[in-house]
Length: 327
Image (cartoon, rainbow, N blue to C red; front, side, top):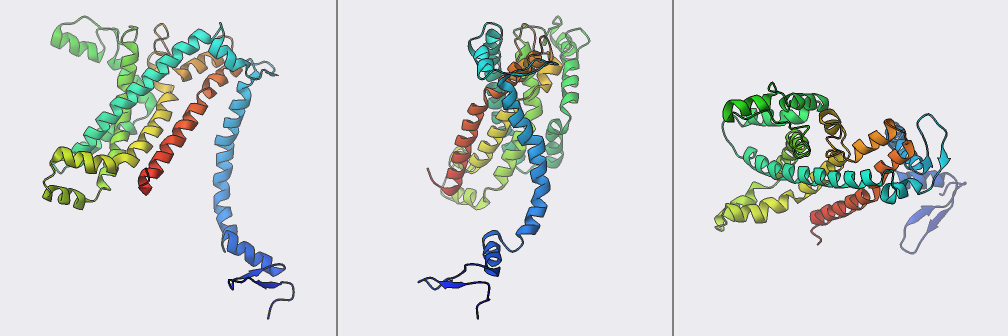
C-alpha cells in the first residue's frame, strides 16, 4: 500500500516514481546516491582548499589585471588598459614583446629536449640489466631535489671565476679561459635551459616509463613472431601506447616551465640585457620592483591564459579520443 504522504505513479514502461512526501527523499537518494551526505562531508574540505587556494587567487588576479593598482596605493578601474599597455604601450610594450620571445624559446626548447631525453632514458630503463634499480634511483634524484638547492648548485657550477666547477674542468681539459655562462648574453638563456632540462627530465622519464610498462608484452611478442624489427615495434606499438602519457606529461611540463620563476630568478635575475626575462620574471619586476604596478604585473600573468585554456582543451580532447579509439 502506498504511503499516505506520497503518490505512486506508474508510467507505460512499468517504472515507478515517487511524486511527493517521503518519496521525495527516496527520489533524491536515487538521484544523488544513498551516501550522498557522507560523500559531501568528505569532499567539503577539498572544496574549501580549492576555493581558498586556487579559485579565489585566480579570480582576484583577473580582477587585479583590470585595475590601476600601485603597490601601497588605492585601486581604480582600468578595464583592458593594462593589456593595451603591454601589447602596444610605450612603457612596457617593448619589454613585453621581448619577454614573449624569450618565454617561447625557453619553454619550447626545454620541453623538446626533455621530451627526447625522457623517451630515450625511459626506453633504456625499461630493459633488464644489472644495477637497473640503482640507475633508476640516481637518474630520478634531480627531480626530488628542491628547486632552490638545484639553482644554487648550478650557480656555483656556472661561476664565471676560475673557481667555478665548469670553468675548472674546461681549464684542466682544454686550457680555456673562464667562461661567463650567466653574464654572457649569448650563453645565459641556454645555460638556464640546461638546468631546467637537467632537473625536469626525470619527470618525463618516470611518466614515459610508467607508460611503457603499461603496454602488454604480448603485443611485442606477436610483432616479433610476425617479423617486425625494433624500429617497427617502436613505431607501431611503443609510440601509440605512449600517446596518453606523452600528452599529459607535455601539458603539465608546458604549464610548469612557462610559469616557473625559480631558475631564472636564482641564476640570472632576468639578465643580462633581459636575455633571460620570461613572463614570470617580467611580472615580478613590474609588480614588486620599480614603480610597483600590480595591475600591469597581473596582466602579464593573465594575458596568456586563453592560450593555455585552448592548449589544455585540445590536448585533453586528443587524449580522450586516443583512449577511446576515436580519430
